[in-house]
Image 1: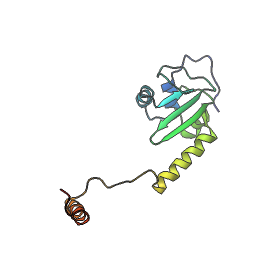
Image 2: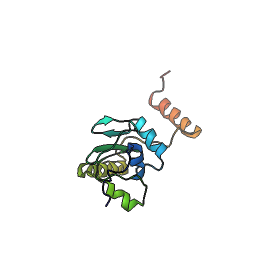
Image 3: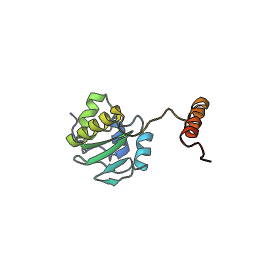
Image 4: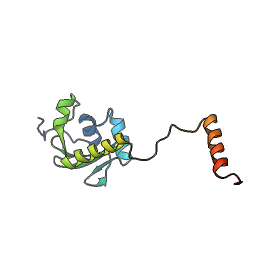
Length: 137
């Protein structure tokens, strides 16, 4: 596990997010911070914010929100098992993500279509409409 090294220079939040492998590049981490997809203690933050051990971050990635607690700081990007030691996801966050994934898998988020109807499907819709409401113009 990483230890906090106080001799290192200041660390930026975008660099920590990159080192903890939440984002593939620092530019993506910076864009997420600027877009409000990362919040520290419930507030939007800038890429230059200095993360501290114990800070609670809410990170939106795709459909999911992850709430993590910073356990350690690291300037370097390492392998995924080592990067996962930099933070801990809260149990509530894990449960919410699993429920949201199950709802998406079950298709409970609403009607999903294949896009616009084809010409044949449009003809069928018009025929159905004319059958149901023959004098509707």
